[in-house]
Structure formats: structure tokens, C-alpha cells
Length: 244
Ligand SMILES: Nc1ncnc2c1ncn2[C@@H]1O[C@H](COP(=O)(O)OP(=O)(O)OP(=O)(O)O)[C@@H](O)[C@H]1O
Ligand SMILES: [Mg+2]
Image 1 (cartoon, helix red, strand yellow):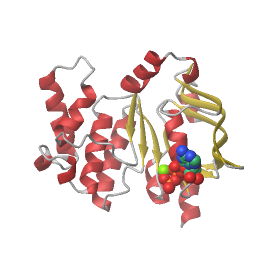
Image 2 (image 1 turned 45 degrees about the vertical axis):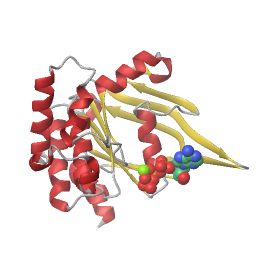
Image 3 (image 1 turned 30 degrees about the vertical axis):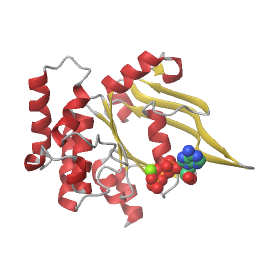
Image 4 (image 1 turned 180 degrees about the vertical axis):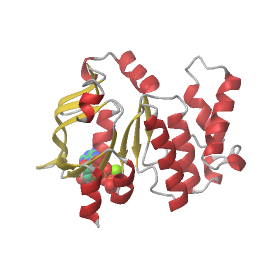
């Protein structure tokens, strides 16, 4: 039985002939090119591929942060292109948690403020916002860094604040672009354990990583991008064998 059957055939995400092309003089850069991708609800999908292969571009299209040149993205059965600006903003605010490759933290706010601000437009009481933010940062090993501003945090610590910010909304889908790129193995494992636990509770995860082992150990499916296209799909065991 495939993952799709298990989840009643419901897709968190689906793309058809998805393209994001950039004209550059006489050249056309096909950052994402004719991608057909189905992500069943509750899947933990890893996207690997060389630098420049289009991973971040694909993630931004899926998260509704970028607009395709052509082709479609559906999220939860709705085409993002058919949504009004308000609906698209709601999709991003309520359903999606995004961990960017560059952390995009607010410089003049503390770690805990950066995290709780993600709930600013929610109905969660400010006290509860603070508690949830502190709890998440605690889990990510930042108990002693709540009041530090991003400039006073290491790269790996900023990374973990960015992850807490993405998770505090309890989104349905998390897009994580190299969330362990700046971390040592212990911290990378802690983040993967957290994502895996949330995945166990039904969260859909799309993880971009250079680390094929990390992908193989944690994801239920690994896809590889090559010049904007999905080159191959395989289950994690095959991916691990190939990288061995
Ligand atoms: N605004 C832009 N204008 C022109 N080309 C762009 C633009 N943004 C990205 N590209 C190109 O699109 C391709 C895909 O970029 P993308 O950032 O998606 O790669 P990536 O797989 O995430 O790489 P990395 O692993 O280094 O983060 C690259 O060749 C990049 O130079
Ligand atoms: Mg990238």
C-alpha cells in the first residue's frame, strides 16, 4: 500500500508542469522546470541536489512566496494562483511554517520575541505566546539565550530560533531550507528529532538538504533535483545505498 492510499489519497501539495524561469540576456535560467510533484498529507519529503539545482526556488513556489512562470501549485486541493491576496496570506500565516536558508530574523528583537511574533496575528493570548516560545526554545537548547538579539547569537543558534518561529504556529506543513546547515551533529539531530516527532503527529514536512544521509535517515521519500528538474525519486534506503 502506498503512502497515498494510507492518507486517503489526500495531497498536501501538488504541482503540474511547474516552471520558474529567469530571462538573463539571451539565456533562460530554468531554476524550476516542468516539475510534477505530489506530496501526500503527512509525508516527510526530502529534496536533495547540487547547489543551484533549484531546491530553494521550488520551496518558495510551494510556500506561495514566489509565483510560477507557468504551471500550477495546489495546496490542500486549492490552486495558489486562484487565491486572493488575502487567502494567500492566510495560507502562509496559518498553514505554513517556513525555515529559510537565510534566517530572516528581526535584528532588534530578542530570540523569544522573534519566535512569539509569529503568533502576533493569531488569537493566542500574549502570555501563552511567550510560554510557547520559551518552551520551544528550551527544547532546542536555547534556554539561556531567550533575551539575546540575533547579532548576539551564533549562526547555529539563529538557525534554531528560526526553526522555533516556524513551528510555534503549529502549522500543517513545514518547509525547511537547510535547517541544519549551520549546526553540529548533536544540534542537527535534535532538530531532526523534533521534526520527526511532529511528523509522527501528522505534520507534512518538506526538507531541503545537502546531507543525503540526513535525508535518508529522516524522510519517507527523497527526491533529487538536477537543473530545475526532478531527476529521480526513490525511497530513503535506496538513497542511502547510493550515497554510501
Ligand atoms: N532572481 C534570480 N534571477 C536569476 N537567476 C536566479 C534567481 N534566483 C535564482 N536563480 C538561479 O536559479 C537557480 C536555482 O537557484 P536556487 O536558489 O533554487 O538553487 P538551490 O538548489 O537552492 O541552491 P543552494 O543549494 O546553493 O541553495 C540557480 O542557478 C540560481 O542562480
Ligand atoms: Mg538554496
